[in-house]
Length: 237
Ligand SMILES: Nc1ncnc2c1ncn2[C@@H]1O[C@H](COP(=O)(O)OP(=O)(O)OP(=O)(O)O)[C@@H](O)[C@H]1O
Ligand SMILES: [Mg+2]
Image 1 (cartoon, rainbow, N blue to C red):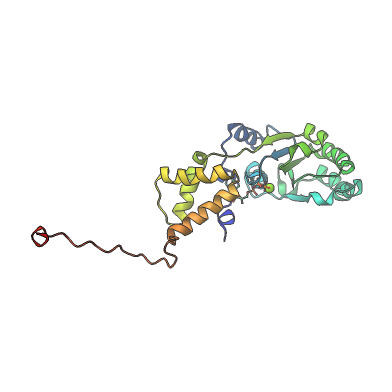
Image 2: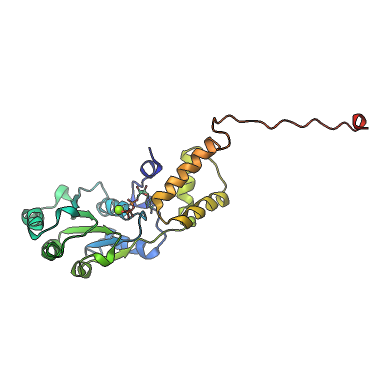
């Protein structure tokens, strides 16, 4: 199993977050201080979908039921009406599973302009009881009125230092011990190439593989260097 799957965070606390602003704003949601739709935006692989998936559990303090939308379904006003026509009524009266709120998560939100306008009404009807969480790589392309109704929160790239303790934990799970400064070098080198944490986990996986199977020695057999003969000064004379 790839490291991105094997070591995918299972709780919000596992997610490597460098930005204090992001941490504070997520705490606002967890502590019921903010109920506006949330749009998590940023570069590829920074953890937007992971945060979107784990935030409802953190708000509910238990595994939360969520509804996931596929943006491709929203090409017309009819698509929006079909998806939400009944649900707006349903959600106004009930929450699933005795939850504080209902949750609707959507990765990418490229509605056609008409569908986006219909969606504004849906948001206005549901905002009191339903937490919308969107993720996108392209915040500029999100409907301006949806942005206006939402909190747009950047999920910025993290630093090698931010990753250090989780990366050490991962290496520990793999039975590998590496001093912090050496691990920091591996992490920084990768983060200079890409700010994707998905790619960082791939790099860590390669690293673990190379420690187990050094490249110069594909069979993994440890070759001992020939031990030099001790020099006998009498013989040399
Ligand atoms: N901040 C993070 N902390 C820990 N692991 C992370 C983090 N971000 C990403 N990952 C790892 O990378 C994988 C992909 O992350 P995720 O899908 O959340 O990124 P994304 O920002 O939604 O990417 P995209 O922009 O491609 O949609 C996760 O399963 C997880 O293993
Ligand atoms: Mg994503």
